[in-house]
Image (cartoon, rainbow, N blue to C red; front, side, top):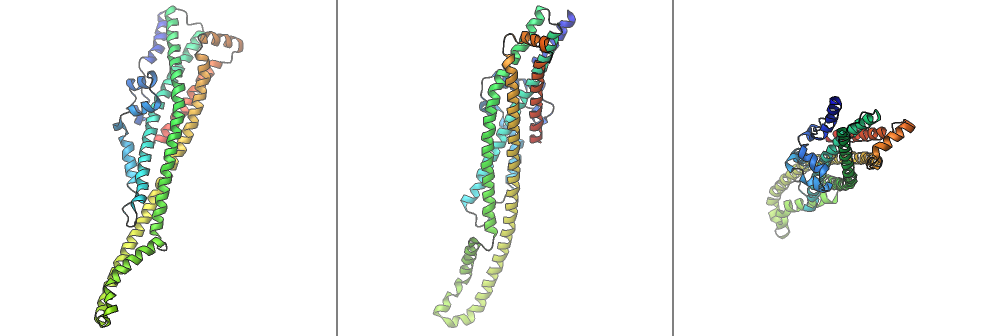
Length: 340
């Protein structure tokens, strides 16, 4: 009896304290018993849970976005406020998108860890039941506690995973818009740098008119030109040379800014691709969760497990839970890559 009670206490104890995920150091500092309780036992929607995560935890995300966006030079002569706004808007969308993704991954990693832990515990319960080791009233009460915990988790998961799919699509759309802003800015900067464009010609014309304005006196007093023209020509050439240097510098900065914007486009595309794959993994996780939940939520779950195993001996219900564990592991593995 002591051995059976000790064994029961060991697996029930898994629900008294949950170890934070050790695979992702970025998330480990946030995963506390309070956090787990908020995710699993609260009634908050996923979007509300996201808001509860301390913004200070997102400082690395914010710093990285600032560092990447600040590489894109917007202080270029000839760029108007509307064109500079593309980068302002892109930064806002990227910061919100990445912050929401980070928060979502934190919450879903908590959910995945707990799902794997409780699934493994339920598998132990099923194995012990089939081996005839659940005999005392205390053990039976422990089993009911395990089943209740699993049912509560699955009921909560059904809601959170459905909301997660919606949020992933919303963030993906926002990042798609960020990508469009960056591409449009790169296009505008490329036009600015192109000497053959009408914009360049307009800039050149304006500067030449300013340089030659001192020669308008030749129309009224031609003799003055004999003295004034060499001086004016020197001024003109000096201005033209300075203008050429300024233009060369502008072109160089434009090319660099365009390259940095395009590099940022590629990074955002990667974010979007990772999101799409992750959403597919959530769909898989959800399907495995729903398949198991259909059976687990029934009051005669263990009796059904025993009956089916006696008839078929295929380990159907254990396989269900193992497939759910594998689906959670797949999500965690991919999210770890995304966070890296």
